[in-house]
Image 1: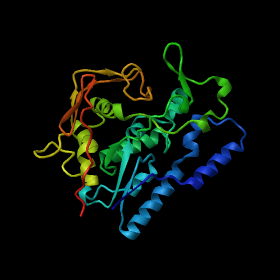
Image 2: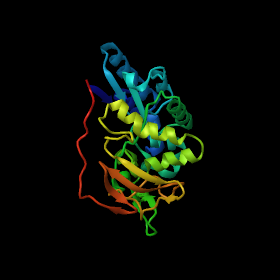
Image 3: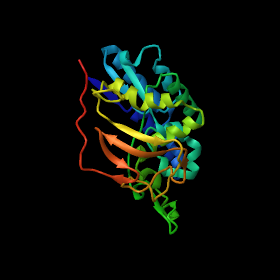
Image 4: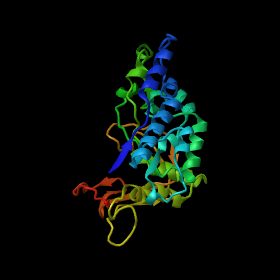
Length: 291
């Protein structure tokens, strides 16, 4: 049975938090990667990997975020034979600690978004196959839960300054990203960072292989038709008017992408086509090819 883990060491996190609190200053979003730092991630991931190797467990580690953790994974074994696998989320590939000044708690998530150097290390490990999958950690918290609101022009702004005290600690961790995850990767495909084939591999083929999904993840006769049509000749501009999340916001608002998703099929059923939904058929339980 596959064991999947979110790896952060709570003891280290608490120690870092208390150290900053002793400085008697207001905690801000930019403190998040200091509190949930590289050591907290590495020590936890290291322990999980050590236990998996000791007991021969099938381990998968979610949303890696640090350069140091990359030494725990290998590209010397085909994915289908790996006993220890790992993934990276789109927001850790896109944002860095430089973005807290502009986006604040909107990009507060666990593990924390860290320095540009860590982001580049994640890209390197993804492209050389130490990281096996591209994923999202979709968490559609409300704007109020993130400590934000919309002003009279509809723009995202922090809550009034008199409410800043405790704002970081009370802000929920997590981002809504599933709607734009592929568009984000197609942006990096257009910039030459990653090939289209690699995007498909890391977001579809490798997912099916990693989790041994039955009859999914590939375009093959007899497989479930889980498909989308992406128009690479159109563009998408993210705005509050076209966000489909029920929470009604995205950290990618006002971003532009060099592609558009026109159709989405699930189990062969067209659930989304050019802005219209058909929810007359629901999803199905996933089946697995596990011995």
